[in-house]
Figure 1 (cartoon, one colour):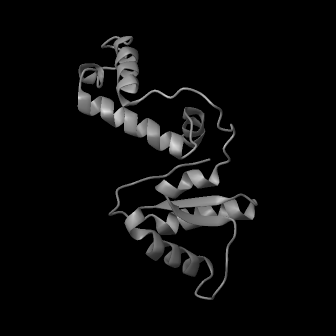
Figure 2 (tube, helix red, strand yellow):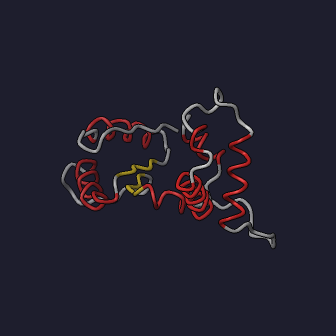
Length: 144
Protein backbone atom coordinates (compact mmCIF):
# COMPACT_ATOMS: atom_id res chain seq x y z
CA UNK A 1 0.00 0.00 0.00
CA UNK A 2 1.22 3.47 -0.80
CA UNK A 3 0.01 6.80 0.51
CA UNK A 4 0.78 9.98 -1.38
CA UNK A 5 -0.31 13.32 -0.03
CA UNK A 6 0.32 16.98 -0.68
CA UNK A 7 -1.13 20.43 -0.13
CA UNK A 8 -4.69 20.83 -1.39
CA UNK A 9 -3.53 23.44 -3.91
CA UNK A 10 -1.27 21.02 -5.80
CA UNK A 11 -2.71 18.87 -8.57
CA UNK A 12 -1.39 15.31 -8.46
CA UNK A 13 -4.18 13.82 -10.54
CA UNK A 14 -2.16 13.00 -13.65
CA UNK A 15 0.63 11.22 -11.76
CA UNK A 16 -1.79 9.42 -9.48
CA UNK A 17 -3.85 8.25 -12.43
CA UNK A 18 -0.76 6.69 -13.98
CA UNK A 19 -0.01 4.86 -10.71
CA UNK A 20 -3.68 3.86 -10.43
CA UNK A 21 -3.72 2.40 -13.95
CA UNK A 22 -0.58 0.38 -13.21
CA UNK A 23 -2.16 -1.01 -10.04
CA UNK A 24 -5.44 -1.77 -11.80
CA UNK A 25 -3.52 -3.73 -14.44
CA UNK A 26 -2.09 -5.82 -11.58
CA UNK A 27 -5.70 -6.52 -10.45
CA UNK A 28 -5.31 -4.47 -7.31
CA UNK A 29 -7.91 -2.23 -5.71
CA UNK A 30 -7.16 1.49 -5.68
CA UNK A 31 -8.58 3.86 -3.09
CA UNK A 32 -8.21 7.44 -4.29
CA UNK A 33 -8.79 9.65 -1.25
CA UNK A 34 -9.70 13.27 -1.85
CA UNK A 35 -10.72 16.16 0.41
CA UNK A 36 -14.39 16.10 1.37
CA UNK A 37 -15.01 19.41 -0.31
CA UNK A 38 -13.83 18.05 -3.68
CA UNK A 39 -15.01 14.45 -3.64
CA UNK A 40 -17.78 14.62 -6.25
CA UNK A 41 -15.87 16.83 -8.70
CA UNK A 42 -12.67 14.80 -8.33
CA UNK A 43 -14.49 11.49 -8.78
CA UNK A 44 -16.08 12.77 -11.98
CA UNK A 45 -12.74 14.07 -13.28
CA UNK A 46 -10.89 10.84 -12.49
CA UNK A 47 -13.49 8.59 -14.10
CA UNK A 48 -13.63 10.81 -17.18
CA UNK A 49 -9.84 10.74 -17.52
CA UNK A 50 -9.69 6.97 -17.03
CA UNK A 51 -12.40 6.38 -19.62
CA UNK A 52 -10.89 8.99 -21.96
CA UNK A 53 -14.20 10.85 -22.16
CA UNK A 54 -16.56 7.91 -22.70
CA UNK A 55 -19.08 6.62 -20.15
CA UNK A 56 -17.72 3.64 -18.26
CA UNK A 57 -17.45 2.16 -14.79
CA UNK A 58 -14.34 1.16 -12.90
CA UNK A 59 -15.03 -1.20 -10.01
CA UNK A 60 -11.54 -1.58 -8.59
CA UNK A 61 -10.85 2.15 -8.29
CA UNK A 62 -12.76 3.95 -5.59
CA UNK A 63 -12.70 7.70 -5.11
CA UNK A 64 -13.58 8.43 -1.53
CA UNK A 65 -13.08 10.81 1.36
CA UNK A 66 -10.83 9.95 4.30
CA UNK A 67 -13.86 9.90 6.57
CA UNK A 68 -15.43 7.11 4.47
CA UNK A 69 -12.30 4.97 4.14
CA UNK A 70 -12.91 2.91 7.31
CA UNK A 71 -16.15 1.53 5.89
CA UNK A 72 -14.06 -0.44 3.40
CA UNK A 73 -12.15 -2.27 6.14
CA UNK A 74 -13.62 -5.38 7.71
CA UNK A 75 -14.26 -5.21 11.39
CA UNK A 76 -12.15 -8.04 12.75
CA UNK A 77 -13.57 -8.31 16.21
CA UNK A 78 -17.19 -8.40 17.25
CA UNK A 79 -18.52 -6.21 20.00
CA UNK A 80 -18.39 -7.90 23.36
CA UNK A 81 -19.78 -6.82 26.66
CA UNK A 82 -17.08 -4.87 28.43
CA UNK A 83 -16.85 -1.84 30.65
CA UNK A 84 -16.09 1.39 28.81
CA UNK A 85 -14.25 4.28 30.37
CA UNK A 86 -15.96 7.63 30.29
CA UNK A 87 -14.34 10.89 29.22
CA UNK A 88 -12.88 11.53 32.68
CA UNK A 89 -11.49 7.99 32.90
CA UNK A 90 -9.94 8.18 29.43
CA UNK A 91 -8.45 11.56 30.26
CA UNK A 92 -6.83 10.14 33.40
CA UNK A 93 -5.57 7.11 31.46
CA UNK A 94 -4.04 9.24 28.69
CA UNK A 95 -2.43 11.54 31.29
CA UNK A 96 -0.94 8.54 33.11
CA UNK A 97 0.41 7.05 29.87
CA UNK A 98 1.90 10.39 28.82
CA UNK A 99 3.62 10.72 32.20
CA UNK A 100 5.30 7.35 31.69
CA UNK A 101 7.37 8.88 28.86
CA UNK A 102 10.42 11.08 29.34
CA UNK A 103 10.81 14.49 27.72
CA UNK A 104 13.35 12.98 25.32
CA UNK A 105 10.91 10.27 24.17
CA UNK A 106 8.06 12.66 23.33
CA UNK A 107 9.59 16.15 23.17
CA UNK A 108 6.71 17.69 21.22
CA UNK A 109 3.94 16.39 23.48
CA UNK A 110 5.68 16.25 26.87
CA UNK A 111 4.61 19.74 27.90
CA UNK A 112 1.00 19.02 26.84
CA UNK A 113 0.40 16.10 29.18
CA UNK A 114 -1.62 18.26 31.59
CA UNK A 115 -3.45 20.22 28.89
CA UNK A 116 -7.18 19.50 29.03
CA UNK A 117 -7.51 20.50 25.37
CA UNK A 118 -4.80 18.08 24.28
CA UNK A 119 -6.30 15.25 26.30
CA UNK A 120 -9.71 15.99 24.76
CA UNK A 121 -8.15 15.80 21.28
CA UNK A 122 -6.67 12.38 22.14
CA UNK A 123 -10.08 11.18 23.33
CA UNK A 124 -11.72 12.45 20.12
CA UNK A 125 -9.05 10.74 17.99
CA UNK A 126 -9.62 7.48 19.88
CA UNK A 127 -13.37 7.78 19.31
CA UNK A 128 -12.87 8.41 15.58
CA UNK A 129 -10.57 5.39 15.26
CA UNK A 130 -13.05 3.16 17.09
CA UNK A 131 -15.96 4.43 14.99
CA UNK A 132 -13.93 3.80 11.85
CA UNK A 133 -12.92 0.29 12.93
CA UNK A 134 -9.27 1.29 12.52
CA UNK A 135 -6.46 0.16 14.77
CA UNK A 136 -2.86 1.29 15.12
CA UNK A 137 -1.89 -1.76 13.06
CA UNK A 138 -4.15 -0.61 10.19
CA UNK A 139 -2.51 2.81 10.22
CA UNK A 140 0.98 1.29 10.32
CA UNK A 141 0.15 -0.86 7.29
CA UNK A 142 -1.17 2.19 5.45
CA UNK A 143 2.03 4.06 6.18
CA UNK A 144 4.22 1.41 4.62
